[in-house]
Image 1 (cartoon, rainbow, N blue to C red):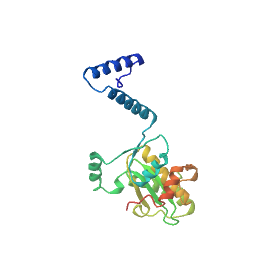
Image 2: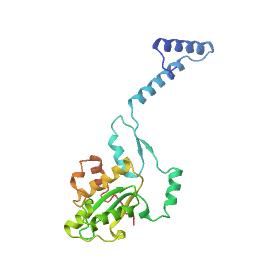
Image 3: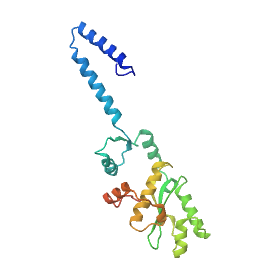
Image 4: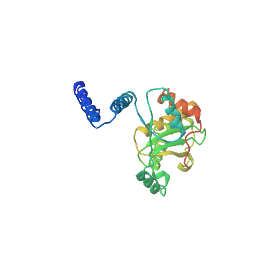
Length: 218
């Protein structure tokens, strides 16, 4: 009766028909009233509550979702550790980390200031592009521009390039890149440029909770 979209008069007819059937079979007709009220409440709660999905990645996600604790928004957690991903990750473990793609960090060997970027090409290819801009005095790369202007050496890839997160292009990698830049901006230690950073209360909460978030893969 509550599954289909019916006019009020049709719902009343169905209700009376079911009630009569219960009565004829010597059942308590109040059961129908209880079931009807329960379904109406469930429908009301479903319409009122929003259920956004978050991929669970640790305590930081709990910190973010707790911001919605006293609202009508309820959080549904999903996992990225499905069988296909686990098998894919397992196969990738035998590869050199610089053959993967994702988010990387370049550290100036002289002043320790950092540059963050993302690439869907292998990390080693992206490093070569930065190095080429440095070698041929091309200011396309912010990292190369910093080294040239401050007369700092470039250093070998294994010493100055760290892989922060390996993944494909998409919204998540954009957000992660922004977070790393944001965090290092708070330390006044990034090369990307302050114009790339906008206020973000969620990033502020993450930095406050775990200022060392962002392990460098060696």
